Image (cartoon, rainbow, N blue to C red; front, side, top):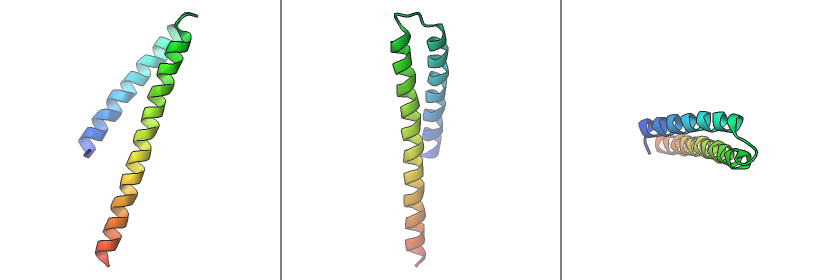
Length: 69
């Protein structure tokens, strides 16, 4: 995945996270747990994306160091 795709994915997930937070605030007793789970899943996905970016960045840095030798 290239940088524009990562940026687009992050934008989509951030928008969905905002929507999930609003829905959680408005949820009644019946839907509260569902909306809470939805919010937690989106947070988890955003954390996975940040982790993947960090791993890819580290891999690219390592590859650049090896090719410089």
